[in-house]
Amino acid sequence: MPSIDGVGSARTYGDACAAAHALDLVGERWALLVVRELLLGPKRFSDLRSGLPNAGPNRLSQRLRELEQTGIVRRRKLGPPARSWVYELTDWGRELQPVLVHLGRWGRQSPFRDLDAGISVDALMLALQGDFSAETGGGLSATYVLVFGDDRVTVRVAGGVIGITRGEPSAPDATVTTDPRTFAAVLTRRRSLEEAVHAGDITVSGDLNTVQRLLDSFPRPETAETPPA
Image (cartoon, one colour):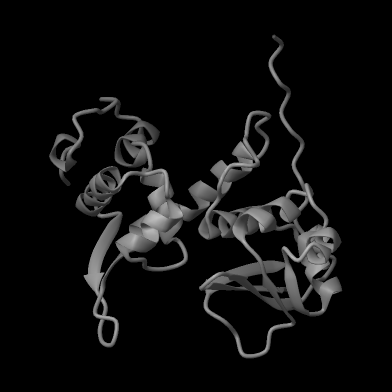
């Protein structure tokens, strides 16, 4: 295995703790968010830039090189007709998904999070994966397509389990067309589904009640106490 110095970073905790070593590998700024953006499948560099607009191209390229050199990400060329280069997670890299899910659950309790900040489609899907509650879902069994511009994501709920994949099934129970910011606002109860539909910010094809049942399957966590001034 290459040393930390050998993958482009001279910073290391120098600690034999496995958690410290993991942070040596993915603790640099943007590294875990690159992993987040690849959880649902391969992406071109331009797609990663769209999902991480605040990461400069040079910084993003550096993180991708480091993640490649540590065996977390790999780069490959798609076959025809695309023939474009994409980045994807290795099997080891995909094992970071539950880490990100639990980190997100912890972060959602923060009293300091800016809920009006930008958010990517992949970040939203990670939130769905982490926050879904079979108990509040009430036996929900349905298939949804979430449409964000050119990006289509399928969400399937059955048997108390949620599954999320890119692509579109042949016969969904409902199709929701919106933008990430609006969907995030509805998901976090800052806007109601009814109000967003009435305002034209969300379009629902299919059963509106089934969409509301999906949203109700994500209870909001209690916010941690703000430290005294």
